[in-house]
Image (cartoon, rainbow, N blue to C red):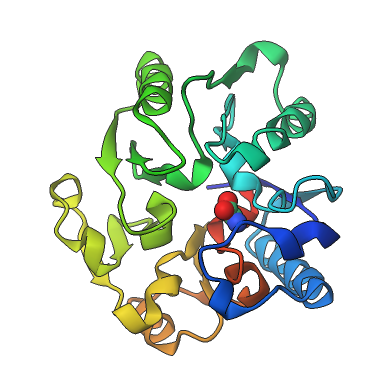
Length: 256
Ligand code: GLY
């Protein structure tokens, strides 16, 4: 169960966020703020105490806080984002995390290692680390070594065709994975029950399990129905403005 979430208000510079989907248009800042408010309310409805950090105008992608840290209840790892425009976000996140952890409980991924939280999938007691354009082998090894020291099993998995590992799949408590076609046959995931995500709803592969509920992006009725049929209480949250810059439900928060 999670107790806390940390989010960061979208900056006006959000309109210049990194994107692989320019055809979706430029985010509407005011609408993004409203969607962010709704996202916070959804996390609170799931029982989380939400810390809202101030916007960082110099970092257009900084509302995607998940990429800057990995948080457990008693310790955290600050990442080193692979996107050069995002590296500076980590310093401010370190200040924020000092409210939750003593300095000796905050660890770091160091260059030349790169790691972004979107590539970290916690699935039951195990952690998978995506090797993507943003997370390199060195960063994954540093992170997996920390996990090993803490008795947490983990392994790297290749990511191609999507930004982050969690762009293409989500873990739902109960041993289930929501997966796009790309990940459906991956041997590392052979022991999970898989819920397939059709190509037309691929964006909804990034759902967020929070304390028994599942946040689902609005506008993807097939996935919503599939989850409801499995008995999950579903909260629909519109993330259309974040989608325009490759953002989804998981990357908008840290949960621990
Ligand atoms: N726009 C989110 C990212 O590329 O990190």
